Amino acid sequence: MSETESDCFGVVLIGRNEGDRLRLSLESVLRLTRRVVYSDSASSDGSADLARSVGAIVVELDASKPLNAARGRNAGFEALQENFPECRYVLFLDGDCRLVQDFPAKAIDFLNRHEKAAVACGRRFEAFPGASFYNRMADEEWNTPVGEAKACGGDSMVRADALKEIGGFDSELMASEEPEMAARLRARGWQIWRIDAEMSEHDAAIHHFGQWWRRTLRSGYGYAQAWRRTQTLPQPINGRILASAFFWVFGVPVGVLALALMLGRSAVLLLIPLIYAVQVLRIALRRGLTSYGLRTSAMLMLAKYAEAAGATRFFLERRPGHSIGYKTS
Image (tube, rainbow, N blue to C red; front, side, top):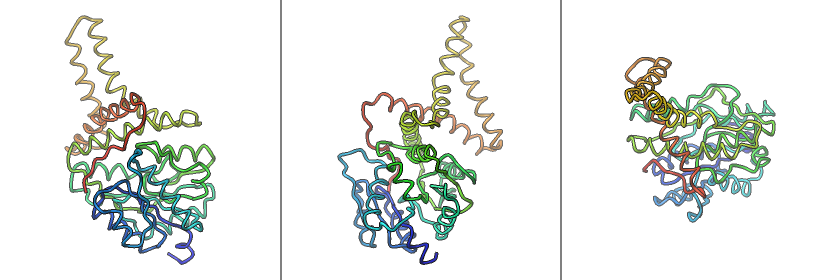
C-alpha cells in the first residue's frame, strides 16, 4: 500500500473477550496503519489493555447500556474521526478477524473509481473450516456473490462521508446492523459492493450446538429489529426471512392441524414431519446429496426455529437487551 493510500483510511476494531484472536487482529491492521481504534464491549480478559499496549486508541463502552456491535462501531468511528479527521475511509473489522494485507488498497481503489459506492467488502473466510461442522457452515455463509449487493458484513471498507450522512449504525440493533445501515445508504442513492478480493480471516470458534443456536437466535432477534426499523424505507429488509421462519415454525403445523380437525383424522398430523423432510430434501438437492449436504439442509430448517424464537423475543420485549453472545475466548 502506498503512503498516500495509507494516509486516507483508518481502522475500527470491535470486540469482547476475543483473547488471542484480538492480538492477531491488531497485528494484522497495525502492519498497514497506526490509525487504529479498538472499541471494547466490557471485556474481562484484558482486551482493552492489550490494545493500548500495541498503540491502538481504546474506547471502552459503558456496560450499563446494551452492548452490541453497532454501538461499538459508532463509538469507534467517532473516536477515529476525532483523532484522525483526515481519514476519508474507515475499515471496520471484527476482533476475531485477521485482515488480508492487500484488501484495503483494493477496496480504496474501487471506491475511488466508483463515486456512488459507499461500501466495498470482500471475501471473509474461516480460519479453521474443518474444525467443526458449524465453522464449515459459517465459511459457506461468508461466500457471497461478487458485484453490487444489498448489504455487507461486519468487515468492510466504508466511505466516511457516506456513513456520517446517514448518522452511522443504529446503536439499538442487536444484530443485522450492517444490512440496516446498507438499506439507509441505498435509500440515499449510495451503492454497496462485494469486490472480488479476499478480505479477512475469521475465527468463528463454533464447536457446539448451543453456540450455533445462540448465534442463530441473535440473528432472528436482529432480523426483527432491522425489519421494523426499515419499514419507512423504499426497500425494507428481512421481511422474507421472517416470513419464511414463521411459516415453517407456525404456519405449517397450524395449517396441518386445522386440516386434521376439519377431516376428523389425526393421521393427517403425520404430514408435518413429511413436509419438513421433503423440504430438507429439496434444499439438499440444490447443495448436493452428500451426508454434509443433508446435515446442512436439516440445520437450515432447524435454524428457522431459532430465528423465529429470536424474532418473537424481540416483538415481546419492551426494550432491547444486551447482545446474545455465543463464543468463549
